Image (cartoon, rainbow, N blue to C red; front, top):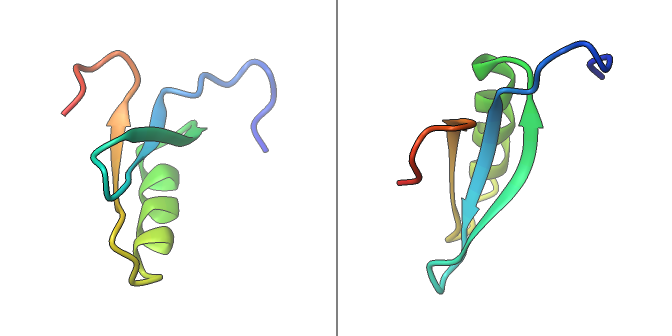
Length: 59
């Protein structure tokens, strides 16, 4: 787990069946966030997961 001096600039977003978006978690690197998104996506459910840099416009 990152210490308090590490900026958590990347987030994983989940979109449910109704189009609602939820932040799953925040991560220090894009690679770390992508691994989490890929792991969640591999469960084969209908939700969508993607990675965004915090502060970028939403999709």
